[in-house]
Image 1: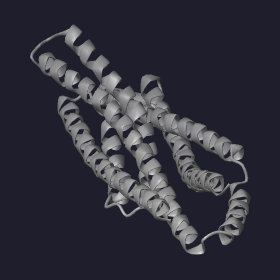
Image 2: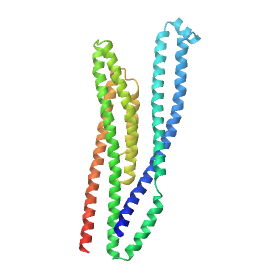
Image 3: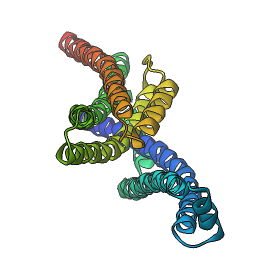
Image 4: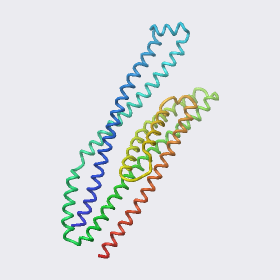
Length: 312
């Protein structure tokens, strides 16, 4: 009976941790969604303005006639079109992020709704187990309970770390695809500069589109990875500066989204992709080291419990 209670108590402790994690993640997603929704609206307004500017120059408005007389209409029109394209890309990227965050919010809310009332069951199990322990050897019972609690905590930490490692590897996988696409775009861009013609230009642009799509995937996985890292640091003492990591990631993505047609920008983006991969690889390495340490602690605790039972 005591062993059965201990097993169930360990399960409930894990569910309590899961509930807390889901609540924290939901709060984080909701805050980010609110911020991104506001940004999306401002980007929509900017895009509409840029479209109007282009239409003025393309049509017979006073502005268009003015630049036509000055002989710089085509130059100004090209500038306005580039600004409109930049606004459209930013708007599409933000719209994608908002959609992803809305899905995350719904998913987390559903997971929380499906959780049982773990707090009530936890208190109930504790009370029942305490009554049984009082009927047995109190000294041994207290020591076993302490060991079991430490094992449960270590396993819970391992689960948190494992989830962070998985999320980090998903980012690495996406970055590998981005790096491959950008590397190909750089090579075709070099060929294009040497007079490669229409085909090399078309292939370069195709690789840039592949990389941009890859960045959208990586950005969603990076968002998840940062949340998992925050969860880990709420549980264990791990030397990872989340704020610096987040700042680097935001700067990295801002630089990658736009202006890839220019060869120097492609080269810069490729280098930033490699830097990001190196940073995440280092972080995963720290997580894996801590995971192995936790495995060793669990093994030691389980051996201690076995020896304690054998001696009694």
